[in-house]
Image (cartoon, rainbow, N blue to C red):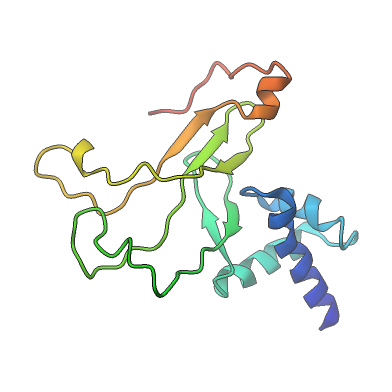
Amino acid sequence: MQRLTRQRNAVFSAFSDAGRVLTAPEILEHARAIVPEISLSTVYRQVSLLLADGEIAKVELPGEPARYEVACKADPHDHSHDAGEGGDAGHHHDHHHHYFHCSHCGQVFLLHACPGPMHDLAPQGFQVTHHEVTLHGLCATCVETGAKTPKAHPPH
């Protein structure tokens, strides 16, 4: 059992080491600093267990491989999201994140803030229940190295 604990800890610590959203191969790269012999299949098994335990969450961006992030633990005293997008008080919505996707290196980063309710952007008569925002562009590292945005942009 110690081996599984060591592997699980290596997989989980990859997120704090990287400080961003990770794909399974990126988790493997970080986890190997702790457990050099860890395999990609072991990473996937540990990711499945961490997902089932609610320790991490899956991040899905259209046309991209699955990524994972540390799950937010809801504060039982925080009722700031109780009204939701549509103002339906008493209906709790899970905490959500927004992302920046570097179109050159492919890395995904968490945005530091939420733009807020989007109901004013919806067509008249529509009710927004939740939203997701992903910004696309170049990360700071790619900007510093003079990278250019690929010619093919994701569909809007």
